[in-house]
Image (tube, rainbow, N blue to C red; front, top):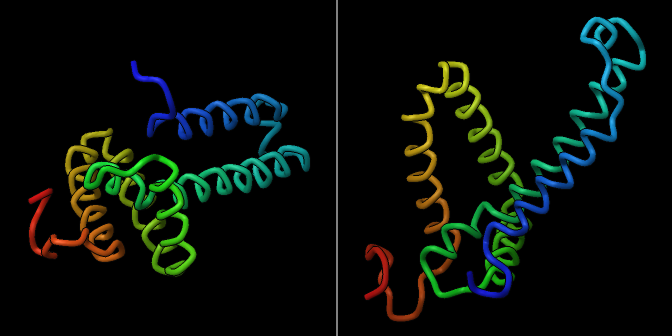
Length: 148
């Protein structure tokens, strides 16, 4: 294993913080969650906090992963580029996040079998999103794939 920051480290840290926050919440029986004011607050706050985690992951990775695959860039540059792309195109990125969430929900609803179709489609679409947002490297043509 090489020293330094790998591409998956920030996501692992985000996941661990999310797990810590979820355990910090008070869990109740399902009946109590749906029938008490405290339960409804738990649902509201839990979903709001989960949304913030999802938004942070979207902002930091929407362009970062394709960029790391396509170019010789570091994690910090990839995350910065992703965050800049979200800042410049907020409506489009929120729409993209909703599309991803809906398609993944459909894939899960179909007993995970739908993910066999959804994941490759999302991967292909993400690549095209990346190619539209990030300028090609000098010397590369827009239609070429990979390095010359």
